[in-house]
Length: 406
Image (cartoon, rainbow, N blue to C red; front, side, top):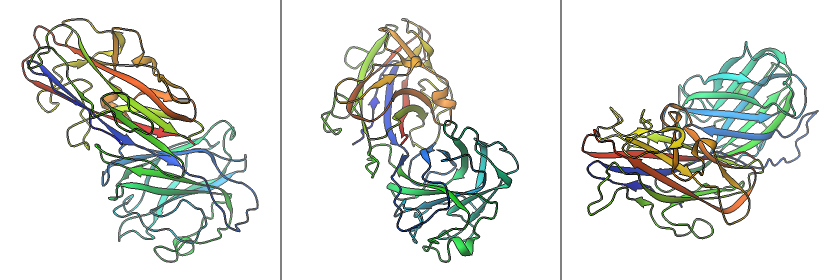
């Protein structure tokens, strides 16, 4: 369960809304009678979304995985399915409303000896006309992974439209030992049909992803990631804790003056991701789709930041006109969740980086080193008005984006 974090302040009154966005999780690969000359299941695989809202447009899918050997690769296929991550399973249902456009846009390739000269194309398969379901990335000539056991292969698919269905969907990744990749007629003879054998297939892997509304999402898949934000510490499994309605200021109604005022919320992480979970914070406008372009608080729909983000972790002083966040290390449960250095635990100090507003995925605030269960972190938001801060109702909408690496 995920709650919406709202606080309102008056004269100058500040409202903070933090909503949780769940993000990509990977799922185990199942094979049924498929034989491979070499290769195997790719490791440390994930696909990170820059926005997990259903039907969101212009989304970047950050694809990362490690090859199983130094065998040269001639191409990569990424197929998105609504029903299953199982490779070579013979079927793949189209995720409703999903598209990468008429031709997928792929960039930022790293992890190969030669990262240039690659060509992006796509297969329609189950998508509507002039849209694609399958991304195809072909090298000019075969090229070997760089330090395959330690260096991931990474690239970004940009301009994606998320599926309109809320919840889990999947991706299947294939790498090939030749630049001769299967054509569309071979790979997907019909919209839902997939080949059960593929020539020159090298490595493979399944990944589970999830779309989610800002207010209420659950990412519970074969590989588990459960994340929530609440007012008080929730019980096991993100149960209870109440809506995180925060109030900054004092008196009735609450007034934010030049003194520093703070209030707290809680996050809880449960996951079986062996490489852990990273939590980023990103600023949005109230629609949850449009980046705010402001790492502080605004009274004019983010045309200006009347109360600015403090920046690097530092003391938040009275009369500063600054806004910040302090993240305590996780407690309770099983496993370890630690704060990012820019949002550390020193009493009276806070951070609020520009990356919260300008970064594609926001700014990291905390992370785990491995699997966790019911680990609770305290988030303290604080602000202080300056003597010259204009009167008004100030708001900030912060989305917490959790990404598991399996």
